[in-house]
Amino acid sequence: MDSFPRQKLKATLTDTSKIPLVLVACGSFSPITYLHLRMFEMALDWVNDHGAYEILGGYFSPVSDGYDKKGLAPWKHRVKMCELSVMESKWLMVDSWEASRPTWSKTLSVLEHFDEHLNGKNNEYCCVLPDGTKKRIKIMLLAGGDLIQSFAVPKLWAESDLDTILGVKFGCVVIERTGADIHDFLLKSDALYRNRKSVFVVKQFIHNDISSTKIRLFVRRNMSIKYLLPDAVIDYIYKVDLYSLPQDKDDDDDAHII
Ligand SMILES: Nc1ncnc2c1ncn2[C@@H]1O[C@H](COP(=O)(O)OP(=O)(O)OP(=O)(O)O)[C@@H](O)[C@H]1O
Ligand SMILES: NC(=O)c1ccc[n+]([C@@H]2O[C@H](COP(=O)(O)O)[C@@H](O)[C@H]2O)c1
Image (cartoon, rainbow, N blue to C red; front, side, top):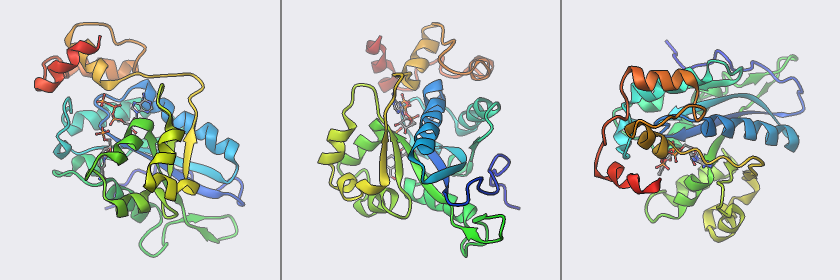
């Protein structure tokens, strides 16, 4: 049985001249915040303004516990917090395939998983237009400026993966990070420059720098986290007692940031 979430996925295009588009955000989401939710809304405004695409849906894909990043709550909790956050959204969904795997999956494999479920191995799903013709759904990675900057970290990303993620097969919508000059980085990075026609930078008109790291620290310090993330997520964090203990030494080191 296919458990891929499709409940909010638009079945067809309103404007058949456009390219159907699905956005996928990969990350820790430990916990998800209003910044992560806003990334999708900023991208939606960009898509509507750009004109070539029509959004069918958006997905959060939380990373597996195997990623072993500091402050990573167990995957079931991270998926649940994402699900609670998208309850009110008409187009955002959460796919737990990546999170539920015992080992870490490269971002390219995650995008390929989406491609398989949204388009099918032989285009059996795709997007069916009212006249019966099928259009392949474009899947793009939705990423923040910091994730893009990690492309420059030696050996973290394979060049061939970057060319597929950023190139014509997928593509990337980048939400600029407050204070970081993404355009400058775009020029400096060979992979980003090579694929610049399918990498789209979205400006944050209202700067938002809510950080999951700081939220974890606030919880540990008994400080308020209200209005930084949805109330349902805040209630969940306290109900199951997440982030109250330092997870490791690195998390303790974050104490200097406030
Ligand atoms: N301030 C920000 N501006 C733009 N994008 C951001 C910002 N913070 C996070 N993102 C993006 O959100 C996505 C998910 O991020 P992730 O949860 O992995 O890290 P994080 O939000 O930086 O959390 P942590 O503090 O735990 O490192 C990534 O694409 C990341 O680039
Ligand atoms: N080579 C890769 O595919 C690769 C490398 C580093 C991070 N990532 C992804 O980037 C996302 C965010 O990672 P960070 O939270 O470490 O910035 C995660 O979803 C992670 O899986 C992918």
